[in-house]
Length: 216
Image (tube, rainbow, N blue to C red; front, side, top):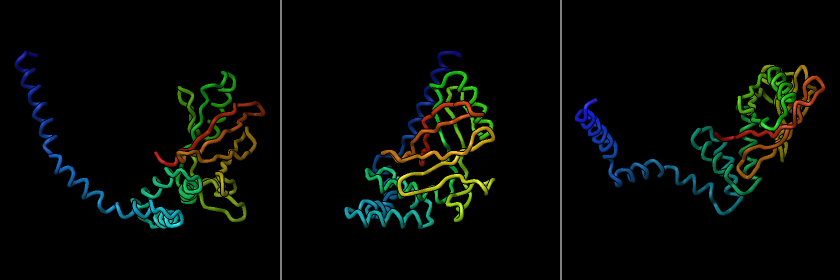
């Protein structure tokens, strides 16, 4: 490519970049103000200094059926320093039967346990990445009063998880692993964390840290 052709191309890119930045700071501010003005009232309700009013705002916005209000309340609640407030959002997420991804870290497993873990994940329809990060989908079905849990969407005779005041318990079972409950509690970011003791055909497949992120 000649020098002059390169120069022309460089100038054209520069003009295109300038055109993209043609929005003045004042115009940008007006657009931001327009977009956020309708939300400020909701944020004030969420951030009410009276904890009972703030909690009521969270619960009502979560139950409103409005996707944007629900997202706003979820992010506010999960970012709260109060565990009880974070738990409101977590219970709402799971009670709505939304799909979640269980993540586990198997990077410290020895080779033999890793081999067994891979076999177990094949039965549980999970995946193991080359970096030994494990992913397992959780897609619950409706709540079963008699069983006291949310059932698995494709096996309604088997629990998927249950909720109590302080923890979410996930039920894991396969042909080669007897069923077991794994308890997860919310950390300060609203992520559910715990540990799972896994096995395959009566042999240990590792004790792995487990987490579920409520927000992407």
